[in-house]
Amino acid sequence: VVLPCNLLRMIWNAQKIFHINSRLPSDLHPVKVVEGVKELSRKLVIVNGEDPLSRQAQENATLLFNIHLRATLCSRRMAEEFHLSGEAFDWLLGEIESKFNQAIAHPGEMVGALAAQSLGEPATQMTLNTFHYAGVSAKNVTLGVPRLKELINISKKPKTPSLTVFLLGQSARDAERAKDILCHP
Image: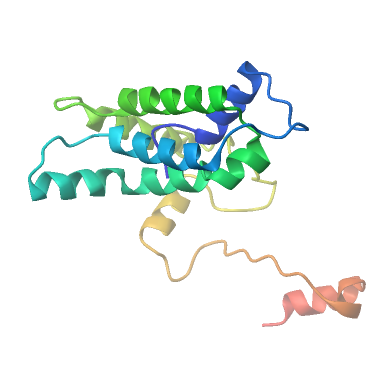
């Protein structure tokens, strides 16, 4: 899931900018954290309006980000894990608000071209059978457009099915036994 801003990266930036020493206790009060996150959540507006439909649309638009915000910026993590100071926390809230507002797609913005590019680049790599994926080893696997078709069409019989099986006990140490298990229908 792509969210408007990378909170952990922004926290890391705050730690570096304000020279936070992780060995020292934080001077940040838990009540300030809770109130700051609530206030920030109120400021993150996508749909303006006070009618019930606008309020519901606003809640739906920011629900996932608010969940992520509250889980990441909870008072315990701020004090024990991130050790942010009050000044660093205030800076962080301001940065989150500005990044969120920059990420809003405005009416009339051509998001279709961006979405097409995001889908088109990996598909082009697959068509050219270039290997720019992390974790692809030299196994005999179906790649490119044929594999994409298998995935999209949810093929019942893939051309090169693969399964990683970890053997236990004596079978894990005996190569002949492992081959017997491999060839067993």
